[in-house]
Image (tube, rainbow, N blue to C red; front, side):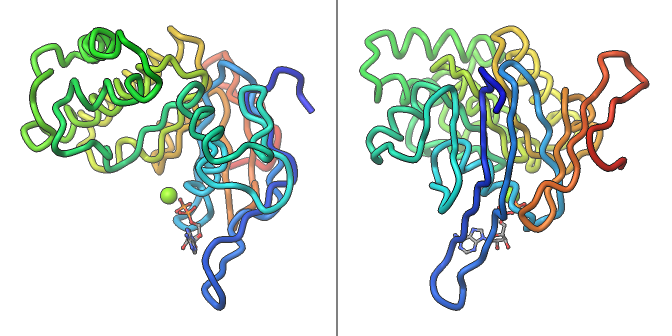
Length: 242
Ligand code: ADP
Ligand code: MG
């Protein structure tokens, strides 16, 4: 209902799998996320967090309900239109980096811009890699970089299209604590500097606490929806207390 919500989901249902393996994953999700906010998405393994991110990113279609992201109703879009929508609006960061192994850091980051026909692709990719502290790794391949460096490349690749919405699925899951903290700081800094909307799936409660709002899923439903007060040490509660 919220006007100008970056993400507006109404009664979203989704089942995946075939035959007896079919699973009803999302069971009537209603969720509006204000533009420019950081939302932490938590919940037990298998509760539907990744699937919900895929719906928000236009990588999975809902079976029922409406999905409006960055002002676009995704349901009527063709696959090509969805791909175009994602390229222009959504940056995604995965736990396992998902870099292309036979491309250098620079080439990996340039890919989304090249797909969009941007002739400045490599110059912009270099700028973005420099911003994440990898000016000295432009021509390295993923196998020649540490996990933290690979995730920085993935962050640069997500940011290079100047997305309105940044989606991250357990981005620190494959990193040690120190490296994970650096990656998260990088993401939050970029989010604030560019006024992006951030949806971050995490197992780490302290990470979720850094977000403006925390949403907890259980068995494909929203179990808790809590706002963080801007005053440290207090919190406003929308749903059930943790
Ligand atoms: P989370 O990210 O919270 O761990 P997921 O969204 O990955 O949860 O998965 C939610 C549930 O849906 C799990 O039970 C998972 O096994 C199931 N699931 C995910 N993808 C598929 C699929 N393509 N086909 C069938 N079941 C799936
Ligand atoms: Mg998951």
